[in-house]
Amino acid sequence: MYLDVKNLNLFYDRAMVLDELSFHVNKGETVSIVGPNGAGKTSALRAIAGLVKWEQDILKGTVMGKITLTGSVLFKGEELLKLPAYKIAERKLILCPERGRPFRERTVLENLQAGAYMVKSKKVMQELLNAAYEIFPILKTRKNQVAGTLSGGERCMLAMARALQSQPELLLLDEPTVGLAPLVKEDLFACVKKIHAMGVTILLTEQDVSFAFELSERNYVLSRGKVVAEGTASQLISDDLVRKTYLGL
Amino acid sequence: MIEMIIINGAVMGGVISILATGFSLVFGVAKILNLAYTAFYMVASFLLYIMIIMYKLPLSLSFVTSIIITAILAMASYKICLDRIKEHESAVLIITVALTILFQEILILFFSAINRTIPPLVGGSSEILGVAILNQQIFCVVVSIGIIAIIWLFLSKTKMGNAIMAVAEDREVANLMGINVSRMCMITVGISGVLAGLAAVVVAPLQMIQPYMWMYPLVSVLCAVILGGLGNIKGGIVGAYILGFTEACVVFLFPKFSFLRGAVSLSIMLIILLIRPEGLFGIIFEEERL
Image 1 (tube, chains in turn brown, green):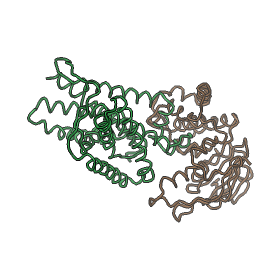
Image 2 (cartoon, helix red, strand yellow):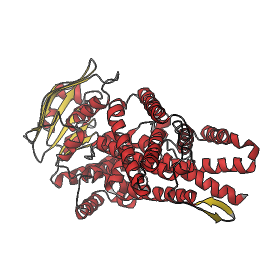
Image 3 (cartoon, rainbow over the protein chains, first blue to last red):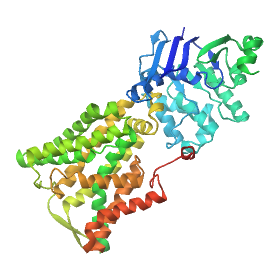
Image 4 (cartoon, rainbow over the protein chains, first blue to last red):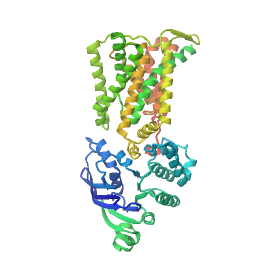
C-alpha cells in the first residue's frame, strides 16, 4: 500500500478529534475523504503531513500544548508519525492546506519559488514553473501580483501550483473548493484532473460531496473522527443510510 | 544648517538602521522580540576593546573575530535560552531582559563602569558641503547602505532568502515546502548577530564603550522598527532614517533643547502609530482586522 493510515488517534487535551482512523491510498489513485464540519478531515491530513507534530513541538509547555497523537502512518512503508513536517515534505508527500494559505505579502512568482525550495536544479525549477503556468494560466498573468490581492479561487490555484513545485508523489488537498463559486469549482476540477494525469496520487478532503465523488475512484465517509463508510461513489450513493445520514443527498 | 542636518541625520539613521535590520529580521522570522539585541552590540564593542586595546591585535583581525564571536554568542543564546520558550511571549521578554542584565553585570565585574574608547577603522576627517565630518562617520553611512543592499539582495534573489521570507510570513506552511524552520530561525539569528557585530565595528569607535551602552540604542531601535512596522525590514530601515533626521533637526534647529531629541523621536512614533497602528510598512489584511 502507498499510504496506510492505521488506528490514528488524536486528542486536543481531552477532546477527541480522530478515533482509531484507518484508511489507505494506492499509488496512482484519487481518493476522497468526505464528511461534515468537525468530522476530522483537516486534522487527519495535518496529522499525515506532520503539522500536528509541529503543533505539539511548538506548543509544548503552553495551555494549548496537550496534544496526543498515536497510531501509525506508513508512506511507502516508512513510518511518518515521528518525522518533522519538513522531512515528510522531503519524501514528496505534500499538503496543500485549506484555503491555500499562500504567502500573502509575497508575489505569485515568489510563492512558486518558495514551493520549489527542495529543487536543486534551476532548469528543473523553470520546467516546473512552466508546467504550473500551463495548468493554471491565470497565475502567469498575475506572476508579479502580491498573493494577498488574489481572489479566493486564484489563491487556491496558487497554493496547488506551489505544491506542484515540490514535485509531489502524493498530494493532499484539504477542501480545495471551500468558499468558491460553482464556476470556479469547475475550473479547479479540471486542474485537479490535470494534476492527476501527471501521475500524482491525490488524497483530498471535501464537504462538497458531488465534487469529491466525480473526481475520486474511492471515497471514505468520516464522522466524529472515524471512517463510517467507504467505497466508490455509486456504492455510497446506493446505501440509503449513508446517503441520508452522512452525505445529505 | 540644512547640510548639517542632512549629513548628521544620515549618520544617525545609518547607525540605527544597521541594528534595526537585525532586530526586524529576528522578530520577523523567529518571532522573537529580542530585547537583548543591543546587548550583543555592546558585547561586540567590548570584544573590540579587549582585542585592540588590551591585546594589541591588528584592527582587521579584531573586527572579523568580534563579528564571528558575536554571531556565535547570538546563536548560542537563542538555542540555549530562547528556542524552547519562543511561543511564550512574556517569557521571551523576561529572558531577553535577563540576558541583557547578565551581560551588563559581567562586563561591570571585569571592566567596571568607566568609559573606554577604541580607535576608528578609518581615521581623519573630511568636509562635505562645508560640513566637517569624521571619516569614520562617512564609513558608517557607506557600510549601512552596503548592508541594506546586501540584505535586500540576499532576501529577494537567493533561495535561502526566499525561504527565510516564507518562514517570516507563515512558519507552519513553510514546513510544507520542505523548509527546516528551526534551521532558518538559527541562520537568521546568526545574521542578526553579524549585523550587531558590524554595528559595533562602525559605531563603537564613535562612542564611549561602557556596560550601559545597550540602553539608548535599544530605545532607538525599538522606536524605528515599531514606527516602520514591527518585523518589516524595509519599515525598520525607513523608521531608522526618520528617527535619524528627526534627532538631527532637533539638535541643529533647537540646540538648547537637544537633550529632548529622544523624546521628540518617540513622540513622532506615537503620532504615526495613532494614524497607522500597524506602522508605516506593516501590512494588515482585511480578514485580520475582524
